Image (tube, rainbow, N blue to C red; front, top):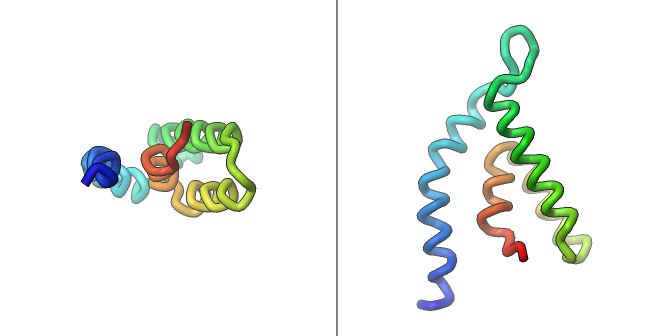
Length: 89
C-alpha cells in the first residue's frame, strides 16, 4: 500500500483540478477583439512554466519528448498532468 500513497495524495488534488481543467479548456483563450482572455494568460503562464521545468530535467530525450507532446497536445490539462505526475526532482 505504501507504493500507492504518493499517487493517492496526488490523485485527490487532481480530482479537485479536473473540473477546473475541463472548464478552462472548454473556454476560448481569446476575447472577441482577438486579445488574450484571463484563461489564455493563465494557460500561457502554466505552459511556459511546464516547458521550462521540462527542459531543466536531466531525463533522456525520449522521455522529454513524450512529456513535451503531452503538454502540447493537451493544452491546459497537459501542463497540470505534467506538474502532478512527472516525478520531477
